[in-house]
Amino acid sequence: IGGIGTVPVGRVETGTIKAGMVVTFAPAGVTTEVKSVEMHHEQLTAGLPGDNVGFNVKNVSVKEIRRGNVAGDSKTDPPKGCESFNAQVIVLNHPGQVGAGYAPVLDCHTAHIACKFSELLE
Image (cartoon, rainbow, N blue to C red; front, top):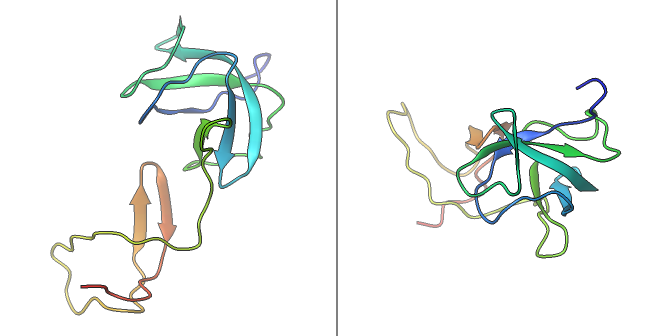
């Protein structure tokens, strides 16, 4: 936003987000301070779980973070990317076999990314 700076938007899943907090974006690895938090054009003292908020951050270009990044408290278990993870998956109305090597598109919050099943555990 011109004159304001970069304002990421998203849903608070757990915890809170407040002005003055230092947050890290993953997997971008960008760390910055939150200048303000707003919801529906009104400033908040804190964003709570379930709130869809916009938050102004210091010295971060819109090119440094992307849709699907996760922001979290830098001081308490900051978020980080991963190469692999285990997931419980429900497959609905899929023609054909699903097994190791299958490469679906994963939707997680606002991220939309290709992945590959390396093995099925059960």
